[in-house]
Amino acid sequence: MRRTLTYLAGAAVTAALAGMATMSYAAPHDAAGRAPHSATATAEAARAAAPSAARKHAPTPRIVQPGERVTGAPGFELWLTPEGKHWITPDMPDQEQFRSVVDGNIDLNSPGVSVQSEGTPERVYLSGLYYGGEGTASTVELETAAGPLRGKLIELPGRPGWGVWYAVADPVPADDPWSFVSAVTVRTTKGTVYASLSLR
Image (cartoon, rainbow, N blue to C red; front, side, top):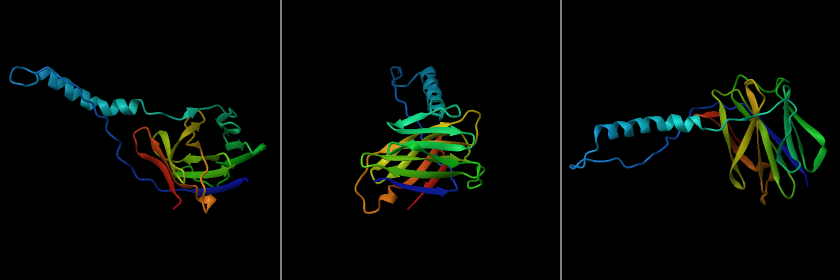
């Protein structure tokens, strides 16, 4: 049985502190057990560089061309145009669905996330828009009835101010199938919150 539910919210965001990377290593010591000045300076420099190195390697959204199809799972495809998000699911491969970013229903200047949840007996197909946040989007984290889940991000070239996240999960028995997703958080490359949505 196919089910579809769409949530939309322009949630206010608050900054979260980025996690600090931790490094450990051994340095030579003199007879009194003291590290030479050069070893101490090297250690301090390494500790100072660790957070910036972690940020440097943070993932960024996959950049796709307008109309380029991305496969989230067999039969679950998404693509972007300047007008918004398009997708199909395995149970309705000939029925394209669309979520606009230009119809006035969302404010691209305010942080927000939307959720579209569709399911078959085998999979739950999750996706949505994210938009309006500060910084570069990096990751998406979901709280679901099946547990924590990480998705992927795609955007059009040229920093359009919005993108699409998507994920696939195994279904779980539930009294209320429409409450599969309880929260979505998109984080930046610095670990701060780009935009979030709570459905609890």
